[in-house]
Amino acid sequence: MAKNIKKAEDILTDDRLVAELADKFDKSGDINNDKQFKLAVIIYRALFRNRAFIGKSQKQSLGLRIDQSINAYKRRIQFYRIAAAAVFIGLLAVPSAIFLNQESDLEKFAKNAPSVKSVTNTRLVLAEQAIEIDKRKSNIEYLQNGSAITIDSVAAANQKLALGEVALNTLIVPYGKRTTIILSDQTKVWLNSGSRLIFPASFTEKKREVYLDGEAMFEVSHDKTHPFIVNTRDIDVEVLGTIFNLSAYGDDSLINTVLVEGAVEIEYAGNKILGRLSSSITPGTLASYNANTERLEEKKINTQLYTSWRDGYLVFEQQPLGDIVKKIARYYDVEIVLDDPALAYETFSGNLDLQNSAFEVLNVVAEIVNARIEQRDDKLIISKI
Image 1 (cartoon, rainbow, N blue to C red):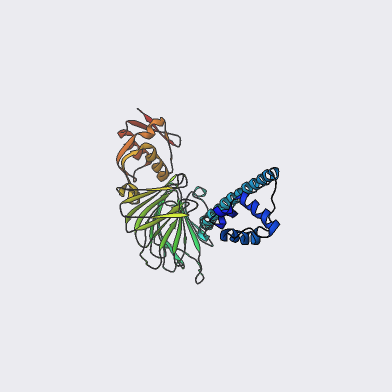
Image 2 (image 1 turned 90 degrees about the vertical axis):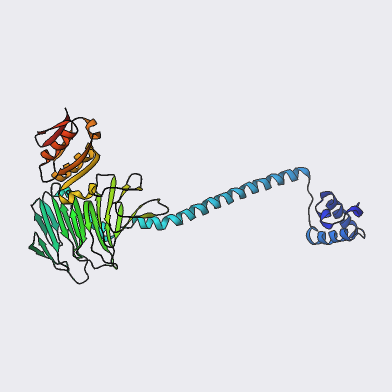
């Protein structure tokens, strides 16, 4: 039988031959003169001398135990793979989570600063005092060192600033008022009604950072080594020197950035694992960030539709009446009611002169959309004819 075996491994992998080999080895200590069989004997002596042969029932029991061990091993391997994947994802997410949850001193300050609803007059809040401005329009200017401040070309305050100190000031413009402010770096900001701007009295850091809640138009002074960043609740806009409009009212789901000239980069919350995303836009572009979907959409527009308020009028092109009423209500600090909800979807195109009263402005719109306007107590009511 052994003479027909060509290779030692064939012998050692055949249970019947291994049993015969073991029996003969135990009895005689040798087998025959076949070289392959002799090789098998040598291997057997090294590896299988103490091999035990068990019965069928024992084999079945042992097989069951082996199967259980294999399944347990597979479960452990699967667990380790899932755990490793979770750790890997966690490692990706941790830097992003840290970044997304980190608050700058400016953002922390903004949380505790007075809100727009807390004032009736325009208010400039300094470290040691608050200045009330009861005019509907006002102009504020900071001198280059940030300590001396003029309001409507009249000296108004002189705050003490330690060398290198970051002294945060707050400008609050309530509904029905507007203010222009020139910051210490000569950046000019037009602040619309119902807005709040937080800024350093003097820019002493590598980045010039401010915080906006509401709407403002910025004409940023160029400084290549000190980028200008506007922080809002959901997006940050970074520029070197440019003109753009940013609308980030707390009660709006959209934050709109309109670039007039220059270049800006918008950083916004995206995928929580991958962290924040960014997008650069070109002049004549509207970038709308939706806080609900966390998506940024861009399109080319007529910039006057979003910037004309700075010059005292509003321009609309097929704008829904619901959006128009919201803007006018903010500008004049007046409550406007659409008597029929369907009126919110009527569209209007044209220019509205903000030098006129709220009633006069709305009357122009009412005539175009075939509606009428009347005043009841402190409300302006628009109804279908």
